[in-house]
Structure formats: C-alpha cells, structure tokens
Image 1 (cartoon, rainbow, N blue to C red):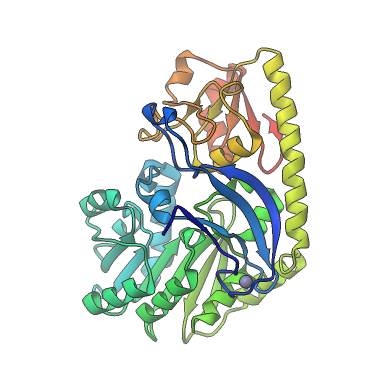
Image 2: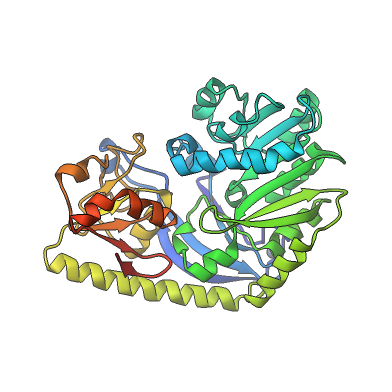
Length: 409
Ligand SMILES: [Zn+2]
C-alpha cells in the first residue's frame, strides 16, 4: 500500500452516494509527534475531510492513510491515563463478567492496546489481546495478557479459530473508528463468536459529534463516525444482529453495542434508532449544520486568541492529545500563540506537535512558569481537570475551552 488511498465508496454499504460535509485541509497524522531532529525533515500531510453516506448514513473519511504510518509507534498508552484505567475496570465488571461462564471461555479484545482491560478478567477466563502496535506487546504480556500482534481481519479470525477455538466474548472499544476494511473485520468476528458468543463494541456516537461540534475527533485515524443506523447496517450485512445498545460517557458519548446471532432484540435498540431519526442523523442536514457551527467557533476562538496575544498575555496548551492536533492545524495555531503544550504522557514530552510544531513539556513546568491562560484540549476531562487545577485557578489562571462551546473559565 502506498502512503494513502482515496476511497470512492462507503466502507459499510459500498454505495457511492456520498457528500462532503467538512474539509479540514491537509494535515499530518495527529499522532505523528516529531523529535527535534525530525523538525528539519519534510513532514507528510494528507487530506482530511468528512463525508456522509446517503445510503447507510455513515459519516466517514474517504482519504485513508496507510495504517503502517499511523499506528506503528502508538504514543498513547491506555495505562498512562487514569480515567481510562478506571473505565476499563468498571467495563470488566459490568460487561465482561456477566458474559463469562467458565474459565475455559475465550475473551478477545480487538485493539486491546496495553492489555489493561483484559488484565481485570485474566484469572476468570482465557484472554487474548489482538493489537497491531507490537511495541505494546511486552507491556501487555507483563500484565499476564497474551498478545497477538495483528490488525484484526477475517484472516486473523481464521487463525485464532484454529489455534484457540470459538470466542465466548469479543470486545472492541473505540477501535472501529480506525478500521478501513470494516466489513472484513465484522465478517471475522461473526466467525469467531460462532452461534453462541457475544460481541460488544463501543464507538464514539455520531450524534455526539454533531450536537457538540467536537470536530477535533476527526483525524486520519478516525475513519468512521457511527450512528446506530450505520452500525446496524454493518452488523446485519455480516450475518449478526444488534440485541442491546447503551449510551456510555466515553469520549463524550459513545454507543456500546451488543451483538449476537440468536438473541432477542431488546427495546433499547428501537429507542436509540428513534432518537437518531429525531436528531436528523439519517440525512445530511444535521451534519451540514455541524460544519457551519465548527467554522463559526473557529472564527470566535481565533478572535479571542488574537486579542489576548495583542495584550501580551501568556497562553500555553493544556494537554497534547491527538485531537488537539486537528484543532491546532485547522485553526492554524502555533508557537506564536501557544509557547508550549503540557502533557502527562512521558513519551510525548520533549517532542513537537505534528504540523504546528509546538513543543510538549511536562506539566511540572506550570509550577515555575505560570501562564495567564491555559488552552484546554482534553475537553472530555474538563470537570476533572478544573478540579485538579484548583490551585492554579485560585492564582487567577483561566482555561480557554473551545468544545462544545467557546468559553473562558
Ligand atoms: Zn454507506
């Protein structure tokens, strides 16, 4: 595969009735943080634009960057972020434990990252973490979670079936946004779960993207933004059925979708489908309104930053998540506005943000070098961060928040 390909068909329904919703320009991959030496080298960037499929209602990118470029050295480790660890512990209790019947049951986590989720269930079932980022293998195995280094495909499913047998449970949390050949993945899962198994996946909900204007979720790794309508199309096209759906607060709002072959459909499915119809998600109008809102917010934020910079205020970025790079690149914000970004992930410290080249430092820097404004990128942890930084706020430091609405707190 070359560096990137441009699809002309929807990856779920294979239809070609697609309309462009939002063009974010040409940007480097959001996780392609740079070392100081790399700053001098040419940087690869790729088109970033959101499209809507009028046939199955999947919102998606059609420009697909080679996954080898995107995921080889994934800098984000689940274990490095405390709220996620807590989330996975609860998930193991709420979702996995009720589905595991015997220690012989096989539980597979597709895109299991550093193995943190399966580590909570490893003493009660056989577990297998399937993830392409082989730099995570030693971390997963140290936790007692066997690692299968691969992008999950239908062929991977065949190999796992031969080696381990059917899975009682297959889970995938926030990975299907990343997958281009998604039908092939679902075909693989359909084989793995056999007639008896259950498949549970979580995807960021397109309704949240649209209603909250969180365009910074759009980056090359996130190829799909699922509505339940789109997910249903995909599940049924691959011979399975959705029997339950829950709305969970991951990434703002995600759908937790339960799938099997022979389970009675519960009322939650029709309820959430109806919510989507009411929100206009089965047509493109809601997406067009979202794009207009995003463009208006950009103008507002840039005006605020221009004024603060003119007044000589010191502004730094709080957090350097991948989504922050969509925002920085789309807004065109660099070191003329933000002197640096702080991030607790030690792997990111000392590196530079892709595209805008803002240096990333440890949050310890804020203790000795207090700015007047902190530009918040991890809006999904806003309340926790405001609480954590009470001391800075008492000193008069203000947070600039841009998603869902522009506000200074
Ligand atoms: Zn489609």
